Figure: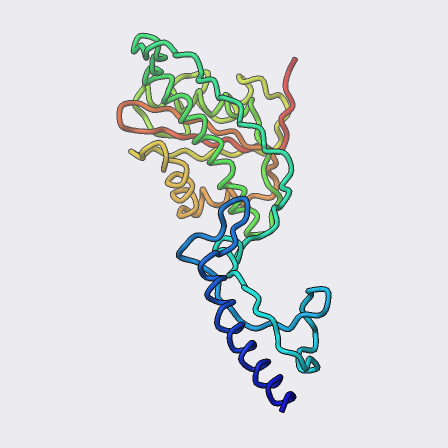
Length: 264
């Protein structure tokens, strides 16, 4: 009879303990020094088997006695995704302030360089046309496998003088009305060439614009058999070109020579 009473008493005591412990724990929830957790995140209860020293067992199924009730608090929201701080080194220094350049003086129209006079501009363009004629002539010679011609300042001066005479005296011919410059030989000797060997001359006059004048003159000479013969002659090694502008008309002269021996 006594063992039965003991069993009944043990069962009653266990039921009362299981009913009273949660009620007491809910009535007096534990709090830490920081007041965690807040009321809206109160923990829940679940049975966790403990050992004799109060630590949770790793194998709760091996425990035969009734487990104790341990309150488990939820993880704070901010701690769930928390990451360890990353050392990014010292903060970069702020950029140095950029000092604006000092204000410059106002634009003065009077300080603008004056444009070149029309005569000076024409001289520059005409000189470029003379050099371009030499280049185009050498292009035509290289197509035929001939050696290029060399520029001669002495021949260029003689050619320029004859172009100037044609523009000033209003004639177009290889023979000049001036007695001292009547023929090409006279003009070469007067220009200081004592030993020129073989020599030839091409002349042309047209109303070309200065940028296209070189192409136009060379094309005219290449279309004429006599002028083309001078351009393609193998005995010539030097070339001088002189171009003069009068009004809207250009006068061009080419002088060829095998040698350019100059009297000193």
